[in-house]
Image (cartoon, rainbow, N blue to C red):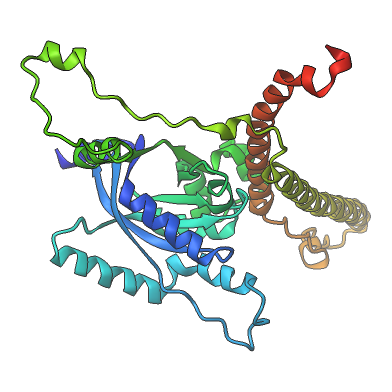
Length: 366
């Protein structure tokens, strides 16, 4: 029975509202430095329920390592925090304390902060592989985009590494031959799971009653269900006027700039691979010419009844260039796709607004 339960794949992630607020506060406090932490919960019939979280200790940067005003070094250390030995011990100790107070004490992954959707990198892959490498390990990575959430919409996403990418990363085989054999592409790196923000019934009732003015006199209980349906309490609805804003979102402009940077990085990786192909072609041409010459020499020696020369000396004389790792190129391609989806989402809403007010902006076209 237990084995059949483990075989149920994860299909969604349910996060408690309190956990969301903790993650948002922790990531906003350390912004723009990367914030990381551990999440605990349990797996219930393919739904990963996250009930609590706690941040990892902040790493101190020595003055000899980097400039004191450079937060990039701090971000790099924070991004590597989930797999460091000190934080693994800290995580185990925290989980032991949670177990003593009867709180869910099963580690189900980790969370990290992002800026402008820039989270597809080597640190994310290494951390998630560290959590997901054990058999039947039900863990996810929660990514909270602080910049996107500051625009008024919560950005919280859950990711897992795909099984095909896990196998390739475990063997560190990111060569052209292996990727063609396994049909591994940049789309197979991450698997996104839908997130459900869960509130208790008591909290939901409180949120519905919070915006309304408390009654000044005692309420009469309805005599029947029909009376309750006939006079339903008004639900406070506040209009959202932000959707009428016609200004171009600066988040879109910044995302386009970072998209161009990712494309340039992708072209750099592509040029490096093309340089390797040219070097390999030159060496193979030299090897072919050497083999042809050695075959002709052995043929003439055979006519002279002399012992033939070894034909495998080319392995000692020539050194084939090593193929560069294609993982970085795959991550750049996946990051380009991430930026493209963000740009597409923003331009769709802005374009519809512009068409709606076209006659007001351009009176002569009316």
